[in-house]
Image (cartoon, rainbow, N blue to C red; front, top):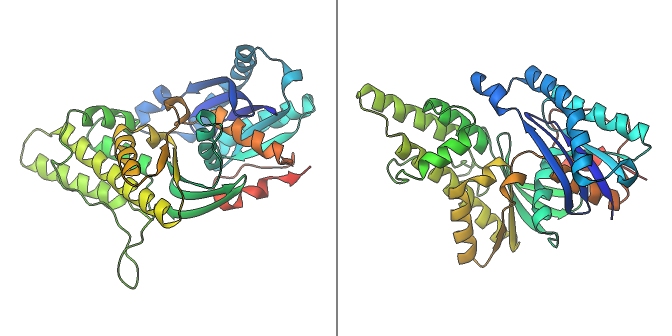
Length: 348
């Protein structure tokens, strides 16, 4: 069983973790949310500088927390795609340097593959094939997991990601950044049926709708128009009801598509990854729908929903077991389809 030290610096959280096969030995994360909150979103240059400041102390902390030294580590991994290029380069440079100094194999990991592997950390006996609903600030996809490095995207958003929509609606309601947690909290005291909102279906040229693709830009615009209309009337915004109605619309749409996709492709297990996997309404609706359709649904623990290095290390450990390593010439990629993940590796 391989022991991997991994670094995650794709966006606004610096993470370092050590994972032995699918067991987490240590997992440390330094969040940048307080730094970016005044700007209402992530500032790439600020994120890169913060990663540069934090990566070395976190590497030391991860080794100490796991009670391990470099002789215990079999490989070094890092996120290399997709993400903010400057931020990715911090992790890639650190990982390559460590791999060369300590003469360890180097592995670059696709960020979305990491989110898929987050479920393995709590369900080590999980085996493909299964369906992964990946919902985060930058991605919303339904992915059929066939095996290590083998993925097929069955559905995706045509515009905004689910997490991105949460952030934009939170901004409309003056709730601050990030939007997901605060909307979830306020929705608990709101009425999810207070305002009917569009689910965002994708029309097909010959009529009908795409069963697995989604759209959130129209939903965001509907909330904007609703807020403008209420403001024009001079009434106090029913923020809790708006939050609950928006959240319920997103969760219902995601649940409907995930269940239909799993049934149509005869997959009996649905895993959920990404920051929106922490949303309470999505968890409730998807678990209820899965139970009704005799499907199994797996949500990772909250600490593995948001960006972290443990999921990156878990994915890297599996690739290493399949004799995959990355060349030291590997670069950073702001965009890369998950179907191209094997381009990151070469056989030992």
